[in-house]
Image (cartoon, rainbow, N blue to C red):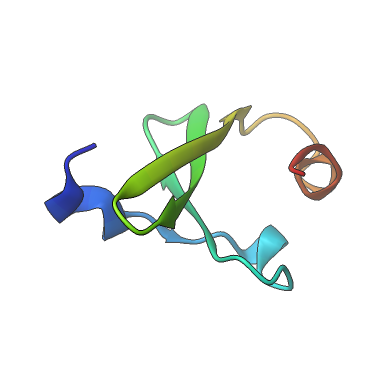
Length: 62
């Protein structure tokens, strides 16, 4: 992602209680990217198949 579009994703509600804000972007109907931004660096933390149980996302993201 380019810096100007890094905030295009929405805050990930399943990770909203974390001290760091995680954002997610649905790429297509089945896949979502979960990421966080730290200054000028974007960390991709999960490529998520949305057909999976959503509660496991919070346990898999460290």
